[in-house]
Image (cartoon, rainbow, N blue to C red; front, side, top):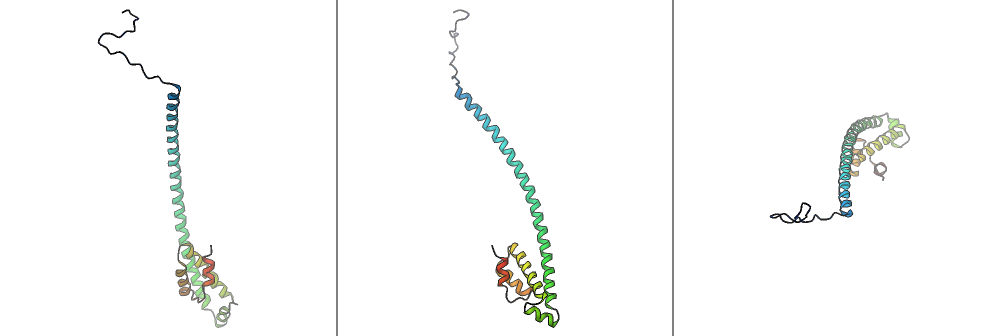
Length: 151
């Protein structure tokens, strides 16, 4: 046994040859690394978008809350105007009851706006009907309800 002799040394097991790595193994390894890198990027982008959506949702929730406060205030003012229009003089009341006076248009417009606001906030048709009958003292609400709950 010479210095360059590849024969095993006594007492050592013969070395098993390493499995040959071909081009397919390299491509699979590179693909796995590439896939893992893109998964990380996608997760980062998704997390960033979720943070943005949370911020937008918070702004929208604040906007809806403020809009509802304003709608409540407007509904109260419109109901007050309607009651005031109904409490006009006898000639105004007679004209309003025939639909000829300005008071009738104002009361109907106010009732329509209130009905729309209630519909948008999720009130049922029956709830809106009862509210219009109680607050605006209306007997015929079908037209207003049809417009408020259309489409």
